Length: 459
Image (cartoon, helix red, strand yellow):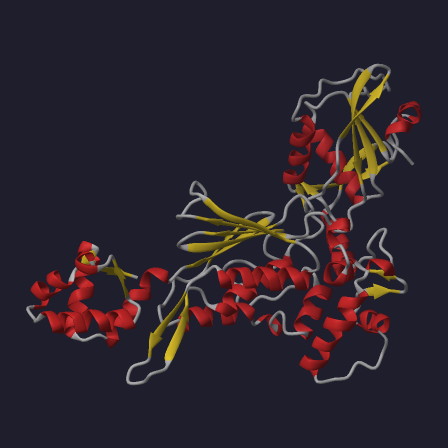
């Protein structure tokens, strides 16, 4: 039914269990009580610009009225709800219509109080009822376990399932899949009867963004250490979750530094990454696994700076997990997604991912700063820090005294010539050239200029 076209009947029928009138937007708190009440019962419609007696007086609607109201509702409902206010015309008056669905996660609070709809009134829910609702909530399915509205089996990318997913599963599990691709996805709890679940569309849908427009990763790469610097690149990673993880991780690896050094006493080289490779992949995968897909008002955002990478995610840390207990606490906001990704080694099982991230940081040769976590009500940001500025220090343990003196001079003055090197070291031109050549071979300095204009700088 088109609610907007049914305004005359709604107003004529008066306020009831699923309809509420409010004369103006100045009654935001009362509107929020209605949002809480409808969310906790069977849903309903709020008409703003209509008096209690059903007179349409109308309201003034500015350019940002709808956006401001939607933001106010989202910020003040706990857990967040996402009604879409819209303007409608009735008797040459502008009214505001707010449709509120019954929320799958109950109770929905406003200012630490929860309400329910009884007849034409909103009544506060007692502590006893709240505890009862919380117990019932534990038995409910999660968002990724729900049927995807409007999706059919034709929306599944069967070529990806048969040619990539199943062979990957067989290789990892060392088990042969004897069932059909459809039965395999049913066993993975991503299809129920003939309908894909939300998890199924996100994991192997042909076009997941058709159903969940903001279910993608946006990545910006900046020059310098702040967003005020030049934006070097901007990428959007869409498609199914496997594709998003793989392409985003590949981009991060390709656009972060890798230093090679000769091992002491050997001709082999050690590769030392600017950021731990496991940490990069795990943080991308964690963001995909644990974001709140029910909130389509935002997306996963990754910002790359010269000195750090920030991973911003929608939904905050999962229930019961804090920045302090993240190593020990376990909770899956999207258990079906997490389970399948863990079966093909895309994410660590048993909540060991954060343990390994911290272990990788502790064992990194350049001892990077440990990750930082900033949590908000509906978001979380994880920051990891670059070790690039320490790359030059890795070579010092392999340098002789003369080479260290050259490096120290370069750090202070920026450039050095062979003539200056002779004076600094107090050696012959041949000896100075030999030491500079050794540093060039270790890639810690670079040669610039030609002929008599040749000079050297730090790499």
